[in-house]
Image (cartoon, rainbow, N blue to C red; front, side, top):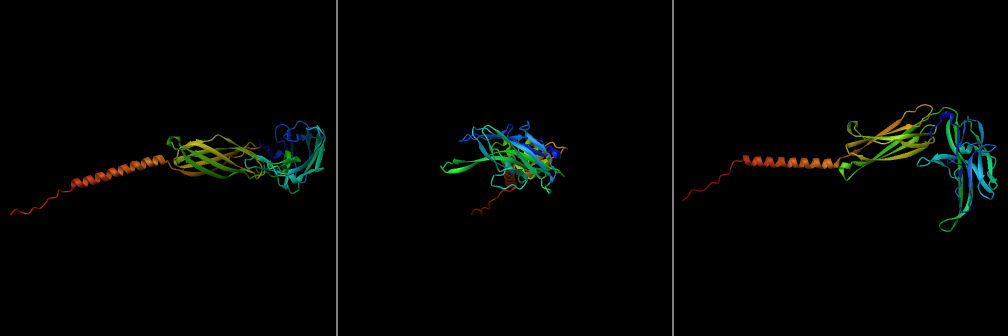
Length: 330
C-alpha cells in the first residue's frame, strides 16, 4: 500500500476487501462491519480525513446483523500496532488504549441490532491539543462475548471481534523515515564444494518517522574487491506504523565461499509525495573455502615432503665413503 503523505489523514479500512464479517460459530453468530454514513454505506472501502490538534471529527461504521435474531454488540475504539510479521494488529480487549483508541468516542458502550438489519453507528475522534503530528492508527471494534467449551470440557468466555481500521494523520511537521537497525548473517557450506553454500540474511526494518511507510528490500552479496556473488529480487516490506518494525529473512543458495563475504541490505521506501532515499546497511561473515584449503594444504605438505627427501638424498650423496683400518698380518 502506498503512503498518501500529509494529505492522507483518517483512513478507516475494513480488514478484508469486502465488509468484514465474523466467521460462523456454533451459535451461527454472524455480522459485518463497514464504513458508512448517516444515510448508510456510500461505496467507500475506507474513510480519508485530515485533522488538526484540538479538532473533533465524526464518522460512521455500519454494523449489519446477518442472523435471524437480535444481537447486542460491545463497540469501542482501540490502538493498533505491528505484529512480529509486520501485520496490522489491534490491542486485546483487556489492554487500555493510550493513543487514537482513547480519542475515539461513542454514544454508548453497547448497541443492539435487530435481525437482518444494519445499524449505522456514529463515532467521534477528538484530537488532543498536544497530539503529535503524523499518523496514528487504531480501530473501531465490535465484539460479542460467548460461552464455549474448551478441550478439557470447561466453560470459557470467548470474545469474538470484528474491527474497522482507523488511520488518523494529525496535521503538522512530518518525517517519513525507515531505518535498518541490525543485519545478521549465517553461512553454511554445502557438502559438494561446487554447489557453494547457503547464506541466511536477517535484517530489522524500523519505522522511526511519524508516517506509516512500506517499501521494498534487497540483498547484495559481494566477495573480495567488490566481486558480486549474488543479488536478491526486491522483497516487499509490509506497511509499518510509526514505531513499528519487522524482521525480514532471506535465504540465498549457491554462494561461493571467498574467505570474507559481505552482505549489503538496501531498503527503498514506497512512493511518497517525494521520492525518499534508500537506506542501506551491511555486515560481513567469514566463509573459508575449506575444500580448497584442504587441497592447498595437501599440496604444500606434498611439496615440503619432496623437498625434505631431496635434501636428505643430496646430503647422503655428498658424504665421502667410510674406510675401515685393518691390522697388518703377522
